[in-house]
Image 1: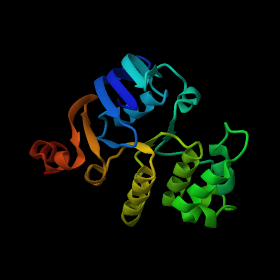
Image 2: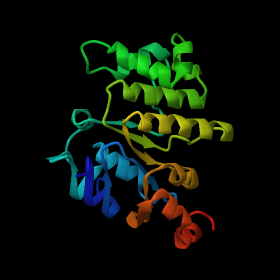
Image 3: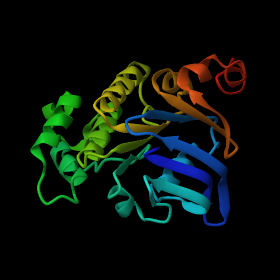
Image 4: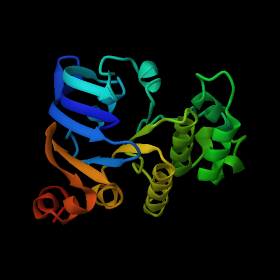
Length: 234
């Protein structure tokens, strides 16, 4: 059984419908990428799962429980956490304080989780007292992921993690995401860098104009002539 199941999802913002009958699933420990052109509805799908977009139809379930009308703070209680594309750290707070904010709902900071974040992102331990706003773009993304991992989610939702990064940092970012997944955390990632995402994920979905177009193992989508022609530039 899937950990997360999205079935027949219609979603958007107020009266604006962006998604039409979208389906996607994520199994325990799976790495799933959602790709497609700008305006395809990728980020809206992510936000709908996390309670940040309006569900207009369909259902979203975690295990046997529906979460489709829950606010984000309640979605977190079901084992999900979300890293938005931008404005995902508190720039005036230090790295240390941002990580503590990531564990805001806990009575005490779990030292083993903090240690795991440092092991995964060593640069954060080196810069604990540096204000987050002075970090590089890649370091801020690592901090945002580290803060999200402080609650030890079963599924990490990542919205365009490579956006705005210098080309030499994109590979490093994807390597870090691979490590998070290999450590047992399922990943659902929206990513504009479709080739890199499909090369690394277990399965991928291609959205276009708010609808499912293709779904399958990442390597098969990369080898699919229609997918390459329509969405990967040939």
